[in-house]
Image (cartoon, rainbow, N blue to C red; front, top):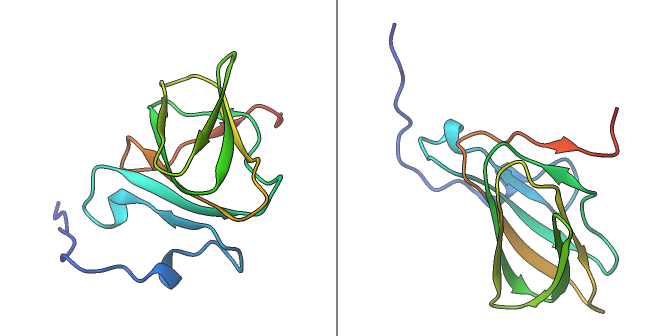
Length: 120
């Protein structure tokens, strides 16, 4: 069995976009990386619903204000702040500012596995 090693390259942001939206998804396994991420640009009030992963997730707030829920705790965060949710811990975030939220959501896995709690 031959395993192909990805050739080092820059991945254009446009190639990572999810549909016509603003969010970009990088799956590490596709690029020989041990991590994956979402680069999210959300308008006020936007954010993912409560969900969990079988690995930790770390957020780096690049711009704007956000409310991050990790388990039973809620934390306000702003540009330059970093937070981490442990594996299997429900979490979510919402843009609480008046402008654009830019947040990098780093998944400690070469694939993205997420289970939303509002799904059957």
